[in-house]
Length: 217
Image (cartoon, rainbow, N blue to C red):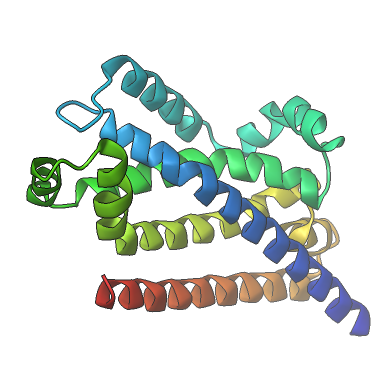
């Protein structure tokens, strides 16, 4: 039993490590991507149709590739970045690549919910595009962006489990190696229970953050 507990603790820590780092990377790159997608669109403050189409096409390509296939396709890129293609740290690369365009689209959607009249009012007062983005768009859309980060994090929990299929570590790896290959049903049930609990906690924390941001907007 002690060995099982140790395996579950290690697997849980590896999953948390993968999800937290991947979420941070997805937020750092995905939010600016979403801003660019929104402000360069037609009739927006930095309208640039060629750039918008290029970014949109890249995002759609990565979002259309199933994550399991993306894991395999990115093996050379992963090895180039971290020096290996298998392991918990290596799994962060495809997790981040999958999450960035997803976060970008969620951020774009959140920004589009901002009242057009608020943007026009800022423009009439002589605000620059950068000021509109940082002082109007992002603050107004912050609760929705936070909700997008929550959704992305929950998706990454599922993706991290799939990363275990190719030796990415974490709870997914435990479920495959012990629950499936060695027919240890108890390990499988424990990993599922932990993953469900993680998702519930993330959703609860995300809801609390969104309510807090909405009140203080």
